Image (cartoon, rainbow, N blue to C red; front, side, top):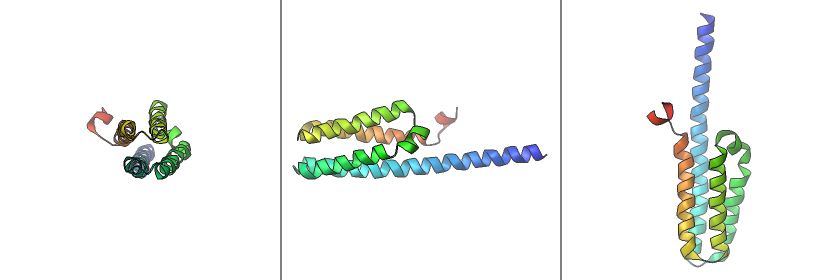
Length: 126
């Protein structure tokens, strides 16, 4: 009977860890998305000085999360997100608001994908 109780407790602990990971990932993605959106809005309005500072801060924030992301997120997703960050950064630095629109869309969807991959669904269980 003790083995069953220990196994049940471990399953509950594991499920709690999953729920915490989902919450942390959602908060991380929302924060990054907000930062990126502000940079994009500044670029669209023609304020490229502010946009550069904002995208630099957002990219630095993303890179600072590597202690977490390299444990809980697949490396292919980390790479594609990093590439999307730096593509938007390139377009903002080039002061090309038109190209930044596409880069922003790519980065936003890449970040959204990180969040939805971690959520519990029938597809993620089976």
